[in-house]
Amino acid sequence: MAIKSAISLAFISSVILVLVLGTDAGDIAIYWGQNGNEGTLAETCATGNYGFVNLAFLPTFGNGQTPMINLAGHCDPFSNGCTKLSSDIKSCQAKGIKVMLSIGGGAGSYYLASSDDARQVATYLWNNFLGGQAVSRPFGDAVLDGIDFDIEGGTNQHWDDLARYLSGYSKPDTKVYLTAAPQCPFPDAWVGGALKTGLFDYVWVQFYNNPPCQYTPDDIGNLENSWKNWTTDIPATKIFLGLPASPEAAGSGFIPVLDLTSQVLPAIKGSAKYGGIMLWSKYYDDQSGYSSAIKNYV
Image (cartoon, rainbow, N blue to C red; front, side, top):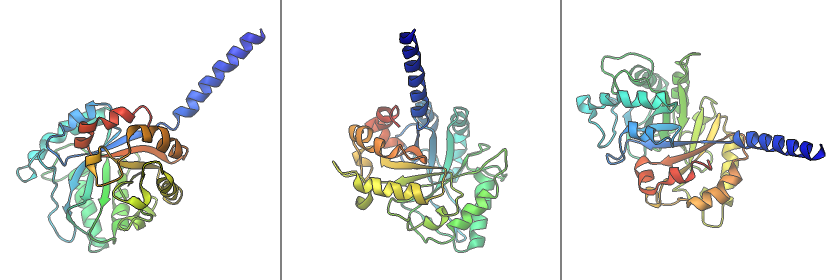
């Protein structure tokens, strides 16, 4: 009888342990769009590796400019060639994957001249990519899940206004998700103010090309300290660790799979705000197989 009880208790304990450990399971977010050799969007989602796909980028907008997407070799927006992505976007969403439009990027012509400019950009994004209506929508009738702020230039003004205006379009049945990709030095020089609004759902922090706060071999102290800043002071639903998917994907900051799974993830997954890993980008992930190697640990 005592032996049976012990076995029962051990079984219950193991079930509880699995349930507890399961609660910190994270997602992988990927950037897709800046290399024509990275496969289609539908193929990207069919891998089963990603919970979020950021379409990169809308690099031209604001200050009276005509907004224009740039998806490298995937499609030609000037001839309405990107409407063919509509069915791909819907196939991703049918799998439960959130598809975001990433605005900005490392090389673009964008800034917001005023709060009114931010309002106009928000209206454009709503009507052309989200739940609104426009004569010629770049991705056809597909409705994206939200907007990703990858702001790495211009000015740091009015991004909080843009977040408020976009968030204003959310309804109980059609939420507009807001995400951001700040650099790991805290606070971020571009969207640090906007992130304080508390309107962002997911923040994938770029822990690369920033030696003071990124991983270095045999020393995760800088990364760990920066992670604590982000998870403590930013009122977002979840924070993601943003990484290059291969050594070639960034100037510095790549973390070998074994180091990530044995050192880094155990150090950061204890945070209630841990959301998973963001990778730049699908093309480099194809070369390295990084997401497939880490997905069972994320």
